[in-house]
Image (cartoon, rainbow, N blue to C red; front, side, top):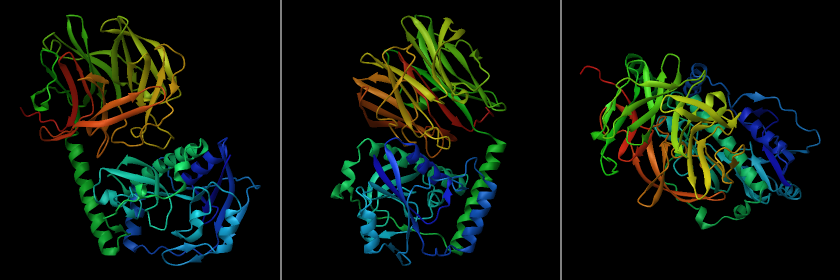
Length: 541
């Protein structure tokens, strides 16, 4: 049993803190051993009036469904000991007395969690076996100081990081335990801050799970490998003039974006190219387009070849008014000539469908469409190709699973996809793998390394995993600076029920013509290659 202590300014808990405390209390191998309360009087905020004013306006206009900063009532077990501390507080640091440090050491804690007390100095940093753990809501390689989630929006950084570290005397420069990266939400400072704080909850809970499993032994000491030079500024809350300038620029940009999207909403469209001899066309500007009518998106193309008939491109067709997608297809002959100019709908449910992962197994065609909004994942079997499909096997129940991507490798089936680790987390940030010996198995086992990634730039699948030149290649979405921005190809080096390793290869980015915003699916079969892209459609010619 690992013993945890929490450093708090008071007993009022924010929603994000409550999630972490609840995780500790409900964990079989963790014990909440003590609450250490700061009895020093807290100082008033020294941020400027205009910064506070504009942030209040932002919170009012851009509300979130689950606010990470709501104060929650949380009934703690009265048996949990509470210690009140009157420390030595200065403008830039907080120190515990030697007597208090000795008393805390006698509790034999494994970890102290910092939810308060400001910048800690002195012996308290080593009072627990694995020190004091704290979240820095930013990537400490490029962003130290504060306010959290603010400067990433100002500086237009594509991702906002969160760093879990064992604190040292160096501000935001302690031992990095783990990091996560979410897409920067440029629509609102409040929304971006909320998203990064919820991301930090998963980061903390995952590290506590590792602690419980005995995977934190290497955190016991500081060494050179944890030292990193920091050459960026120490960020601070902007003063009045800077706050006015920053927020004025922000609102001008937002108004322009809103007007542009209302006048000409961007659309997802399809691209395809056929080359003989099983080659893949690598120059994207040479691809042909399939453009949807106004009010529709066409995305997530997958292609299969049916004997000598030709190629079938299955894809998501979305009605923008209803926001509900269904699965349609285009048919091409064996040299890649489009036969049906109008898509044919083949699978529709009461809920949204997308990402039609189509494949052939034992002379049968199957599709696993994404249906995360229903909370289920189904395997469909083709009854009469390509128009008749029926549900064959439910893979997951009560588990929203995004962009399920299947591969059979060394006698195992592996299913890749992203999940929300908590209800408030992002759907594109956490890659999970499940495996089974049998495609029709009732139980798919979770990979022990789950979540594989906590990074929106390489987690969510972007198409079928394929072999190329002896390499096993996994396309993944680059989910920043916007959803589905680009495609990152990764070489899988090891894939087994116990181990997963991959390295980055090259990328496809939406740069081959003007007015493009994103591209997020790639598939290729026998020289017929398909992609999608999002952009502003010019219909004048």
